[in-house]
Image 1 (tube, helix red, strand yellow):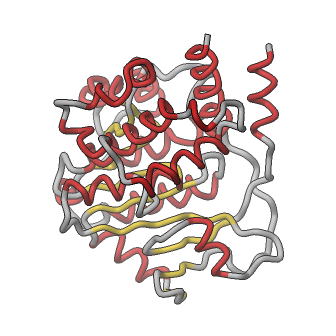
Image 2 (spheres, one colour):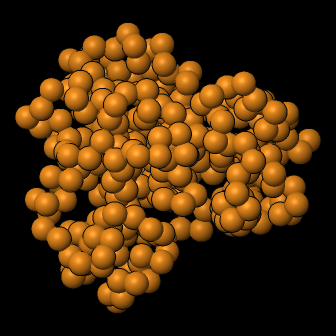
Length: 305
């Protein structure tokens, strides 16, 4: 019963967060600005240069924000602009998992969106929002760079049932074993909040293992080529607790660029508050916001049915 409830909450929450929302009209002064690690605004062209030049680029998004998806498409395009595709490696997506690997290998750079959807056997309703992510898939595919980063549903279920012993003897998940206490505690706190407090903190260890597996998997997928870009939720690209941490554990001298795309908050121009919430990053790219929603209300309603 517990695992069925967990899977219902887990996949329902993912699906709800993934569907695009309308942007709120705004004249906020931070929209379009790029802040660096030293809390200095930098020219957009300089930011684009860094996206092209750095080996491993992490883009952290809010899943339901169309401004983030539009910016991601632009950054993919800029990443491959005027260079050989092979030199920039892959574009790895949280939204694609290991079950898509074979289909991705059979797709062609000039495939239409319909052909890509058919090839990936994309579900009609559940899961990630096709209109939001298909243009990004197509942009990556044009450069033969489309790649999956996530773990699939059967593996998620296996991790939930068997725990971290599933990671043994698989180098992709070596960094998911025995995480530091600070990382473990932070993730447990985030998981408790993101799953709407519907399980006690003491029962969240399986979800912790899943989160670690997802981040380790995305980092490992990036390291399959000498350069790569990752598109994932903002929590997954946090420097000290997400995929960048796992990547650097495997490749200590990795040339990394972490970009957090941040929604502006009405009447808030306090840069320190945005940085504190997003965590350490190399660049913070401010965008329009979407309407705030209580996703937990919907999840609790489904769980009660």
